[in-house]
Image 1: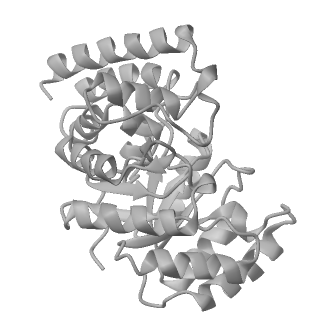
Image 2: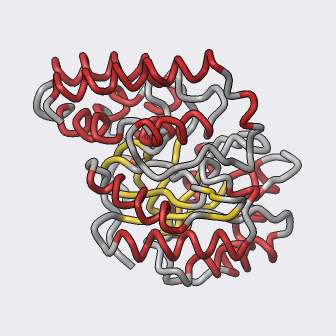
Length: 305
């Protein structure tokens, strides 16, 4: 199990062709991420349409990404979508066998009915006891089916176990990010911000990097922002402003929008998806993505990436 790197972790898309996972395109996308400066890859997550993948597909995708990355990038993966803790443990242990560098647990899976902190902590203890003790772990505040934000007590629990190395933060709150980064200061538990608008501020306060949707559009610019924030704060702020604007266009009929963007870049993608009715990807959204690509290309020229 490798050391988790700081930096940019795209939330990986799943390419489909004829209704099936296109593993050739999975390999090509892995290579594109790495070639564009990503230090890690978050495979098998909500952007991967994990709730619409069979366990066999989730395991196969994780295994393919690990193989394609070949140690050049950290690979983390989630993939537990069941209701019972025992079934979740079975799913996660199968993902762990693929050789990923960390298993990422979905926060809402430990409190499916949103009953509160005590239920979450009880289920967290139970799930932890069923997972391979040698595997690094993380948490992902996945918005589906509802967003379960980590509390300070939950984070303290993570720290006390000594097992956790990764938090994919989706709070989108400058104040909460500051509180969390103070709590994590000096520990081995790294916070990766999923929100483009608060990214630069969180990096300045010690966030380990970015893990979010925008890395499916412009990972090289995010990697450049990560580099600049320590050496050229003026240019970092200018780039951050532009990336913040681009972040507002990232959702729409996502992930169809991201797959269309990948097509425009010449990558082997269809617009097939299981999570969204692709018919909602209309002319308006298509033209927004076209504009996004033009801005992306101008920024690449300006920043020499």
